[in-house]
Image (tube, rainbow, N blue to C red; front, side, top):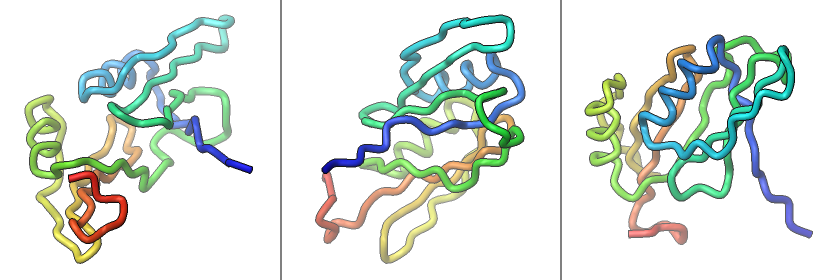
Length: 127
């Protein structure tokens, strides 16, 4: 039986600001539906990902900025970093480890992300 992770709640304080941020760094805006005065469902997907995020102001009890350590795999960490910087996002320097090259950044609420370029020896390497 497969268990496929498909949606992760990312708690934010301002839905429009968060949507603009994520779309600005390349996420696809899949859905933006106002269900009621209290519920607006915004689903976004990182480029090439099978898993999406939902911007959360009231689906969970997590406070804005409390998600730490979300991670995406990229083919080229240096290029991904440059893309973030050109979009006006503060990004860390490249962090080279034996298990990959990483770039770290945060969204406007402080939810943290890592982009990992897998090492060439990895069975998941897409280079």
